[in-house]
Length: 198
Image (cartoon, rainbow, N blue to C red; front, side, top):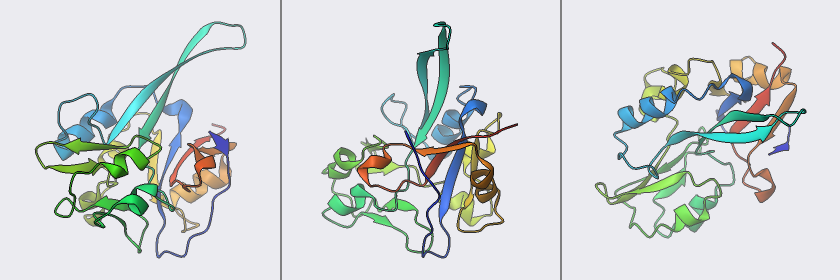
């Protein structure tokens, strides 16, 4: 991860997730809620969101484990959209959410290969690629994504970063560090990882 600053967008909204890293306790409530809400196949490689365990060492050389929530980054410059031969993978102009039209998907999996975040999977039942949608139907009903609603540690936060009064904008404004995954690939991801002073 590399440090970054919040970038402005010309969209009506710029929906993003802001993750406070040290608040994730690895409980997997987000993973379970997502699998349940979206009927994601019970396969390890099939997920819309997941929490990785990251092993490391503290400054005394003792082993540590931290947790890294991962999901589709709904990139502003999404390579999955660029490579899709049918237009099944697309980005909504109004808010930046990247989606897959399963009726147009031919299962070539080019988008899966292009995604630097390994955030897509092929659903054998649907015969289509699938991925996180930021829980669009929940958003349409005024609800947070399922992973945010079930995050017991308050690690996951969601909203419009183009609105300076939103909770996510304020989190970014007051963060002690901000990073995005694999930003050097030029994808302009809309998932931010921050640290804050509690």
